[in-house]
Image 1 (spheres, rainbow, N blue to C red):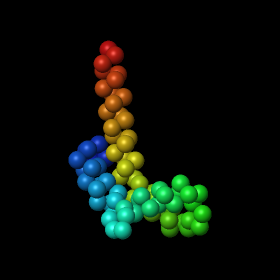
Image 2 (tube, one colour):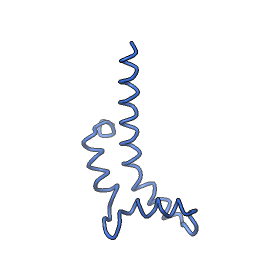
Image 3 (tube, helix red, strand yellow):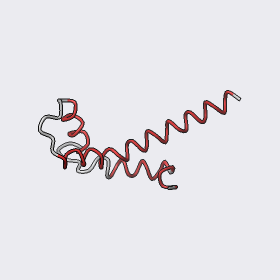
Image 4 (spheres, rainbow, N blue to C red):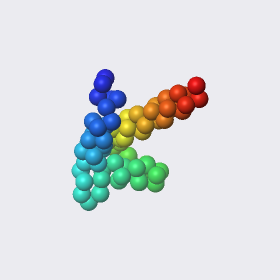
Length: 77
């Protein structure tokens, strides 16, 4: 569980799993464009890809939101 709160690990996961394969464009970027276009023709494997490649990004965003909220709470005291 400490890995999910280590920002260095989360950044590394985003840059590797979160963006792989890199060419011709990052995989998650192509899936997000597909979702924005209505997700027409997406199969269960495509949804799993979105989850797999998006999880590191979601964890990194969660990490920074928790840090901002905790910082905001400590400043108010």
